Amino acid sequence: MMSHNDDICVYSRSIEDLPEEILLRIFRSLLPYKDYASIRLVCRQWERLWRVIKSWRMNTFYDSLSLSTSSVSIHWHLIDPPAKFNLTPRFSHSVCYVDSKRMLYVFGGNRDMATSLNDFWSLDLSTRSWERILATGSYPPPKCSSTFIDDEQGNLILFGGRSMIYIDDIHMRKQLHNELHAYSLERNSWKLNVNFNEPGPICGHSASMVTVNNQKRMIIFGGCTLTNDQSQQATPQSTNDLWQWTDIQTNTWTMIHVDGIRPEPREGHSQFTLNSENILIVGGSSLTRVCRDVWMFSFQTNQWTQIAVNNQYPNDFAPSNDDLSYLPFCMISPSNILITFGRLKRHPTEHERHAYSQYDFSHCDKRSRDDVLTVSSSFPSSSSDENDERNRCSTTSKRSQLPYINNRYSMMDLSSGFQMYRLDLSNIFSSNPCVTWLPSKCTSVFGSPSHSSLYYSLIYTRSELILFGGIEKRKLNLRREFSDKDNRFRSKSSGTLAFITISNIAL
Image (cartoon, rainbow, N blue to C red; front, top):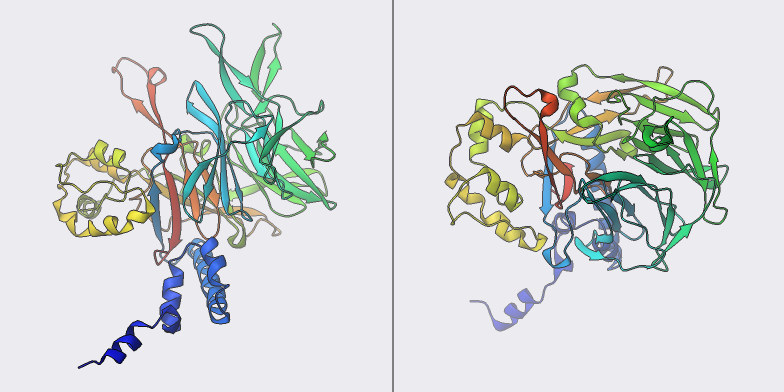
């Protein structure tokens, strides 16, 4: 029989008395933001274990992406938009991640094809909580398709964009913007930077920060501009111009002179800074086609170089033409990999159909589940808050209650989630530069958002990917006598926030 003193001895032990293996197991489940910064301050042992778990988490993430022969699991964690903050679902919005603040900043976007927004939000990655920012100064107008980047000097730079304005009660036209606004993280205020040498009204362009000759510069490429035709009416036109903007102190725009060939004019593409001498552009669309090419620009030679794209099985390894021009890419620098997510377009096998019919949808957003399945009122309700993880796990044992679905097309609706696509950049600086679409490592798309197929944002943070917003477009089959050009689109914007971890172990 245990004495009273023994009881005191047993229950007075703390977490510091646990073996290091158990501590590592606990630390592995913590978010790599403020939690990591806190545990390293406890004691020297915890700081040493923090370094171990930090290295393990990052290496696991990079290896899972780069090793094409290893299996990988994609873990989706969806958080529905908070109703109390009235965070409007959106697409074509502007996103900027600031690692020093551990914050994701979101500006504007489209609520629908005719309505633009100019609300400003921050997402605390440590708590997974949204907050609307009420800033002072010269506030940007409502717009979408703008670029939003960190100048690494305490400011977020918002440039360009477009919005729709009413000409009369029933007619609208596209308005492009040429304003450059700088948001100060320290002063919580917007500043409008006026310069008469800017590229002009533009949207759908790309931007990234580059350090050239020890000077920070924002480089923008392409986009959609307005030009006057013979009747002096402004018409949209894609461009392939390359511009640079120096920091806030000098506030100077300069068009970069390009020697030799240029990429085809385009918009909706992605741009990345490879180093202080080179930038890379991927994807987009021109006036005539979807751009599947890749180009690299050198600041030393002021020349563009087209990079060969290897794709042995286009239908499996790369997104389809219907989606590619609307998908953002995200760069994982240590792995030399570009990531994007597109809809998986294939029929599930009989084995997958049986497995999918018993899948637990309790962690998916409630709206998508209600659209697909008709279930009784006893079905577990959706849980979108991270604090409800216990409720989400408790429903796993009830998978057998889901009805078996025999309809093949219903199964396509269930299995048409986001597939990860990877573009390998490891040979881009070789003697024969090329990029390669790698084989898909995971075909399980359950848990991914159901209304975010196009115009979403994708950001890489600390060993996880963050996907937000987007819009889904589906063709409505009209009468048979109508051609495909007469088909209409049904659009639905999304406010779902998705955190994506990629590894063999759910982090």
